[in-house]
Image 1 (cartoon, rainbow, N blue to C red):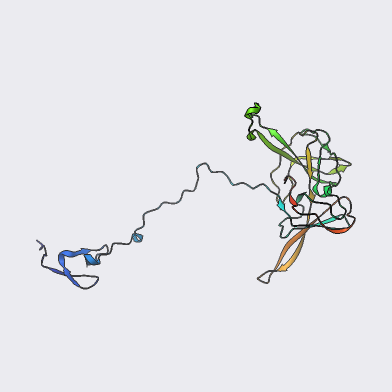
Image 2: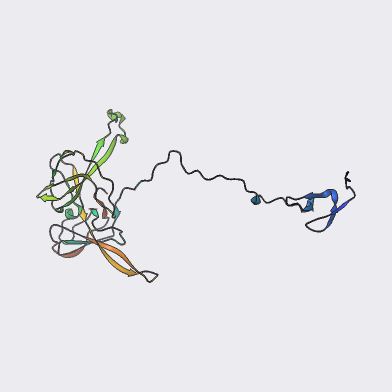
Length: 274
């Protein structure tokens, strides 16, 4: 069967219902016959390009790790004494846990308590090996009868260049060890647990490594805290527990009831030096 070319024919548009020359008609993607002036292409969104699933692995990916605990700064004069061996520290919404070990830096004398009782920093009197079972401190005043200490030193990497003209900072690294002790007699701490770690924010970091330290190495102590919880009503009128302060004990009682400590006071884990 032959078809006419339709050069004199007319057609009715499926869109407008108007009459147009047959040869000017085109068919849309949905089958509608329309005039060229009415033609509308198919929306690209109706035929999206195929897309595969996202890749799940990354080249040279590194595993997730727990961040090292770091120091934070306290407000002005955050420390209170009450004439006893109990010291109170005000730190809003601190998030700490009872039995955390904290270390202070830059605390001034408060209530007759010497600053070194808070800051707990001295040196060791005599070298120790990686297996030593006791440490002699130059001045153990203020250090608790039991607790944790931290020793730190700068160590040269084995493959570092010995030529001083080729010195690079990367040839050195800082290493340290957290040690637990349960006995303190005079300036000597003993019954040591070497290469351990101290609780902070309710978590115990990875253990350190037992090391040898030279006489004169700085040693830092920590305080074991007890959190003081309080209750308050939240916006939903429900009772929630919060804490703005915690306490720790010192070997000798404060002479007065006082508040102070100064400003720019840092508090952090026993292994952190600000």
